[in-house]
Length: 503
Image (tube, rainbow, N blue to C red; front, top):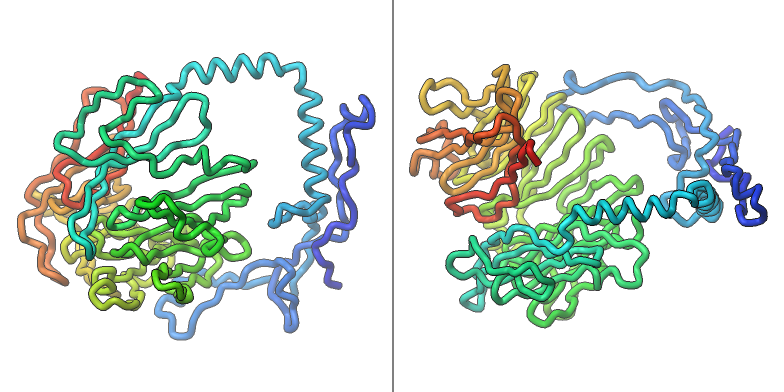
């Protein structure tokens, strides 16, 4: 018989305050022996509410059918005991679950009360080792001209203040040499001249038991700010849009809810993309939203949906602003779709979602864009490591991938087989690309400068030609290094993060 997953009783310890004895007894979670999870193939008429092993669906005509995992499901299904299943509560509102958690907290406090003085001393010691009043490195975020003329360019950074729990997001006008500032280390002193606070999370978190801001993204003209926040702890974010000129909310978080927190602006201040979560909190739908300026709001458009429960979605924007990338990835395979944002701006309408290369079993790949070419890191061909490819920036280009050759030998720079060198990621800029990876057991950065004009033809199938390959060197024998946050496609220098083994 089918047994619904509901709790028939509560935890054994409903109150830890009745006596000293009860406060010393650990709460015991009730076992409901009638609760089960069904494993196997669903027979006709199966209630979809019953959790069970997922089925693998393969579309007719899939060229990769033979490569897909085709393990048969158990038939008929059998019941796996799940006596503590009643404690799974996605709503975080079940009184039985909350009561048991409160009992556990009370028990922990009662057994560790004698450590309170030590706990405070330890907290003070840790706090003394942190520079509470600090700031992140200011980063230049380029602006795009929209109707209305000249736009101000800004440097963006985050400040932390002693005694405050949350970040303060700031910006300042970009003027001349921004590498040095005259900050005196005080709370009151601005990091850069003309500093503006664009989002104080401490104010946002007032009267909230929990607050996490996942993403903060400025619009192309820098006149609007999009940010996502979670006030429940359930990792379900609502999106707010703030007008930075009036400091008023354009959208207050009541419209775009149940998202994964991602925000990607199109090439205007009225359009952005976001991801919805399914019932299992899996990012699975990408939506395009147009903010109404005329009082009548259009319905958000579903751009892409990932139906395979093994895959999670992510969205990003290429540094040159040309494409929105929709990445769908599992532990063993990935697939990237794209939206041409330049074409969208030109046409003033939605453009189709296209696929870079269809997913293949055990093939992972990541994509960036530069001057009409995809730059791709992938383990295609059962490679032990990722290899570096380029291909024309068109749809369904998997047959056009070409390895990036080294400057001197003509062999592949990263072919996925080199024993002492591996590729992690590639980040594209106007003058070339920066590759992160490992060599000789250490994290490494390589700067690839492209021959001028060699690959600037849109859709060109030619192999890229490197003018220079330089590995960044350090004096220390052991270190950690990687790319930091770089937003300017036309930058002549990049920001990196370096950690010394000396601390």
